[in-house]
Image 1 (cartoon, rainbow, N blue to C red):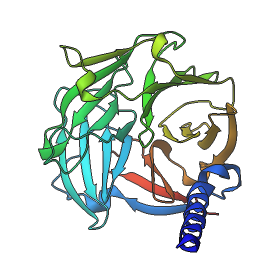
Image 2: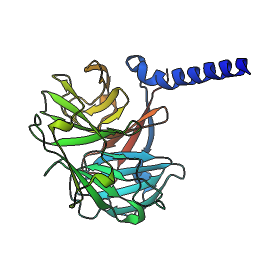
Image 3: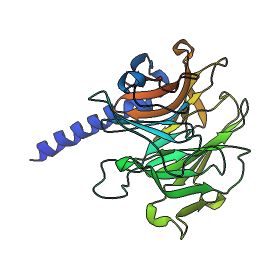
Image 4: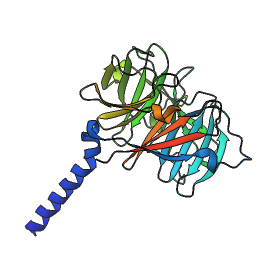
Length: 291
């Protein structure tokens, strides 16, 4: 029996080492691009897609593509079909970034809550129930602290329960700030959460190297940050949040279009690209995290 537990522990440790290699060795990963789809091919001609491609998020077999001014398109990646397309209630924002959380608005819901970066306006994170094709905002998260000169995006390390603000000045510094992820029950009487400087758990300031920030995604000690649009360089940065340094930069210029939202699903980094003046043509590429 003792031998059994020793073997089991060794196997468990081996699994952990394998699972973590894609993060621990981020600087060594080749990140070879592989085309997944153009979502226009999965969208019926009768569906009119409005607004430039922006935020992107995945949950199980589902992918969500958000568009400027609030259009939400949900796709089934296994069936390669459009599930639904609708304008989200009360959201005419830029929808610059998006991610799924852990909480569901109702236990019966298929999809958990979607967190959408307003980007413009008051820079809120719009926590949204997108089940049943309604896109209802059920919570608004604000950051009322210092250091950000303009727009703020939101991203998260959902597995570990942290949410981040991301912003800065194009061509200059960028800042990631870490907070404990609010729950729905943390909302005030107005359905809002107001984070302040006292709530900041950690700060990563990148003085140079990221020109024009796009989407953002955090997994453990690493942030994955798309950058740029034509005619500027399009890049994918991997930032080590412990060392506060860019550990890896992948050139995306050969993919031509503008990188937007990003999600990590399994051993793949998925990046959605915006095709100028063609909102139907949201092109999805993936990059392997396996060595």
